[in-house]
Image (cartoon, rainbow, N blue to C red; front, side, top):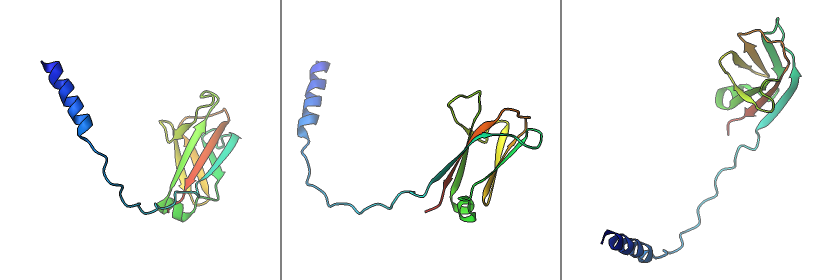
Length: 122
């Protein structure tokens, strides 16, 4: 009896619906963030005895620091093709107008690849 009731309920639900009238067209949305800049620095060596890397990134403006976003990723020989977002447990980032500084609390010797994504505010 329960199966018959569930079958009846399913059929009634599916057949009771009717397609409504077409609504008015909506307004156009705002444009997306087409000004996103990505810069990749390959095979970068650590300075200050293996604790520091500074990269020049002209797209980092005061407006980006105040209202946008700067994302920094690192790829080491240990991670292969995988990018890790910074900061992480031992490496952190300082964003300045025109540059990004990557600092490690652990001495580094192997070169790394760095990717900086600058997202300006709209």
